[in-house]
Image (cartoon, rainbow, N blue to C red):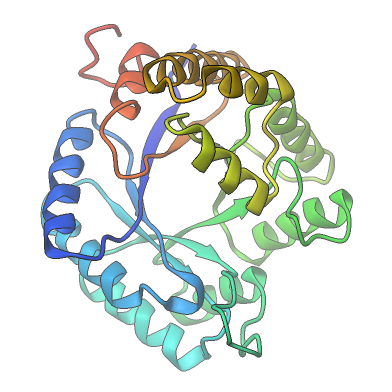
Length: 287
C-alpha cells in the first residue's frame, strides 16, 4: 500500500516574535519532508500583508513548496492579478483558492464572488503556472442550499481548472468516502483531481467545539461526551484526541486517501507525533 502524501497549514502571526516561533515550527515540521505548507488568508484579505510576508520568509527558508491561500470576496480582478504576479515573481507555483468570508462591516461580494470565479480568473491570468487547491466539504458547506448543490459546486471548481481539493476537517471517515464516491459518480477522476483529507488534531476541547460549530463540521457525540468528561485534564484530552485522529487517519489510508493535510495550528506537536506514528515521513523512526 502506497503511503499518502502529507502537508501542513499555518496561519499568519501578528508579531515578530510570533514569526520567529513560526519559523522554528516550520523547521521542525519540514524535517518530516512534507509535500508543501499552506498559509491562510484572513477574511477579505485582512491578513494580506502578514500572509505575504510569511509566505516570502518561508519560501526563502527551504525548498519545500509554500502554498498561500488566496480569497476573492471583496477584491477586484486587478488586485487578484497583482497578487498572482507577485507570487509568481518569488517562485510560488501552488496556491489554495477560496471564496473567503466577508470581514465585519463590509458589504458587497466584489468582481469574483465565488471560488469558481477565482479559479477561472487564475487560469485566465496565469494559465497553468499554479497548482490550484480548492475547498471541499464532506459534511456540506454551512451556507450551501443542499448537499447535492455543494457537491456540484466542487465539480464546477474542478471543471474551471482546479487541480485538487482539501476538505474541511471531519472525524467520520464515511463522510469523506461518501464525498469521494459522489464526485466519481459525477464523472470526476479522483486519481487526477485528488480529494485531500483535511485533518484537525484535537488539542483543546473548547476551541475545537467552537470552531466546529462555526464552520459546520460535525464532532461525533462520543467525542463530545468524552471531551466533556475530561474537563480541564489537558493531558487526557491530548491522548484521547491523538487516538481518535490516529484511527481516523488509519482508516483513510486503508481506503487509499491520496494525501493528508494537517491543520497544524502552528504547533509541532501533535502533528509530528501523528505523522511519525502513521509512518508517513521518510525520516520517521516508526516507518
